[in-house]
Amino acid sequence: MKNLGRHILQIRDHYKKTGRVYVSDQQREDRVAVCGQCPDDMMVIVDGVMRCTDKRCGCYMDNPKNRKILGGKTEYEALRCERGHWDKIDKKYTEGR
Image 1: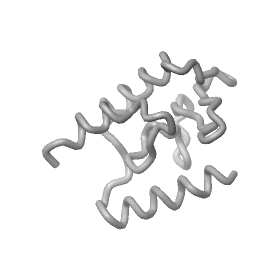
Image 2: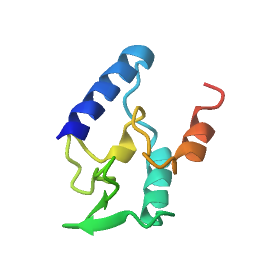
Image 3: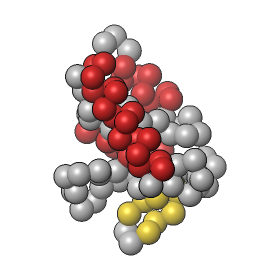
Image 4: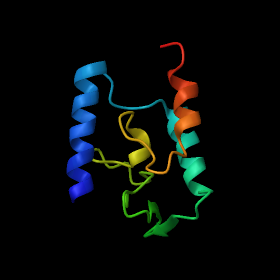
């Protein structure tokens, strides 16, 4: 719950600053692909949903049930991989903005 509260504040603050909430579908897919082959072997599947086991994260990464509220972490522009595995992907999509 602590991480959830922190993430909600990060999303809110990012939106106030940029006017954006979500990444593109392709960026989300690229993030999910990295998680699916996590270099640190921190990913598990719980009830068909990918979840990070890093204690600093613990988030669901994808949103296969298309929940409208609090979907997977990979879809929010403000949120980052706690281990830095999305850094190259995010840089690729934000260059030239």
